[in-house]
Image (cartoon, rainbow, N blue to C red; front, side):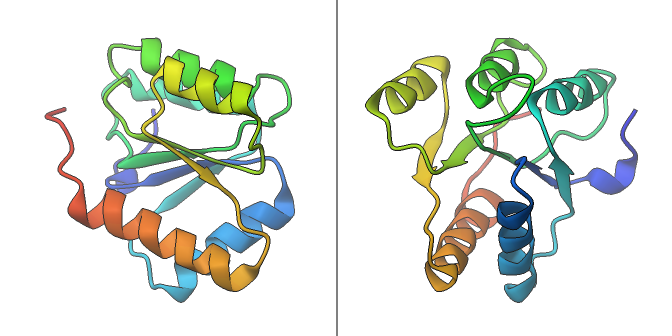
Length: 144
């Protein structure tokens, strides 16, 4: 079972080490206080999510890349949104894919937001700030 230090955590599901580093640096620059849990592929993400069903604290938001090894981001999203325990956790797709089919499928599966990763670091920081502000401060989560 994940430990209780993961209260108010943000889960980042991302296989690209550069994107992981950019995301972590962007949040660190903003002094984000939420713990960030990095999961590197779809299989690891699903295994970790299984542990949440044992009563561990749910994350405040899941940041999900679509292009993952082992299980795609869409498969992970389908798993999350079909789980009675996890389906209320907000999921933000954070990806480079602007393909219409990916966007449509993600919303069909229940994604809460679909954000394209900016290439420029300063713009990436802006995106991280907006994600943090909305999902960690402004959004009122459902009762869990």
